Length: 328
Image (cartoon, rainbow, N blue to C red; front, side):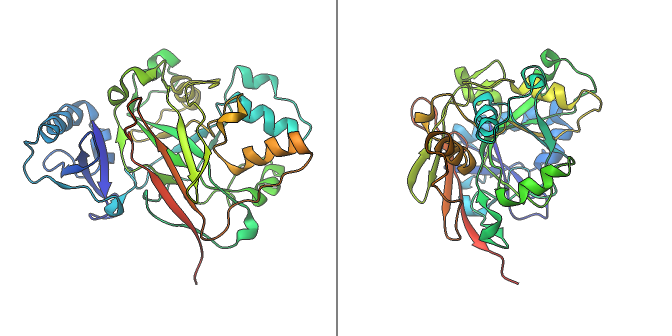
């Protein structure tokens, strides 16, 4: 099934069920007012939401309405936790090579991960507001999963059973603020504004044969200002699958229902498949030419991030966001 949230209903939105082709929806009346509340009672809510989804797709759901992407908040407008990994070895290796560093030996057995911003997520059509272009505005196209309650110290095999939803994220980064923050050896703060989520999150069964070994085996397509930017394969070159990422995050603490876990920037060894962020493209240029030639994003630029099934149908809908200046 596919789930989304309307902007109406307060800070956590109003939970709706969306049909397979993203054309129709229905409010999850009497089941759960918000996606967060559904996740907190997932064993009871999921079967009822699935039944509503079946009725909607069969054309039998009462009070169904045409889906308007502009009316959508993020599926989870805010979350208790968002932890973002860096699971794609080619991206990590290239970025480090460009600055003369090696991939740390620990990366091959332990994922890189940081605590990200989760107090609020942008809707799929919301603008990305930044105080200054000088901060180095960058997109990051990633896959995310959402968990139910995850016990502390789960194994990857156990963690796989706690993955309930899958979606996409534009994990916005302000690249020119990152070096000073990394130099503190603490974490990202100012360099990570709010990120945008895909219109819908889906249960893994919606992905069919593309969901294998807790990975999504499909291309993640990004366009910038209508021009193709990249379409790397999300299931290829992923050093750690989502079950391993969840287990890593839960090593010393339980994870609350509604925790979002990100894959990190999707990247492949084959650079001909393009990039999922400007930093990646600039790194490839630096390794090839000695310096980057592509600037970061400017105000007015529009990013579109989408994933299609093998038949060419959009699975999650598109994240489509314009970069705009802060107006005081």
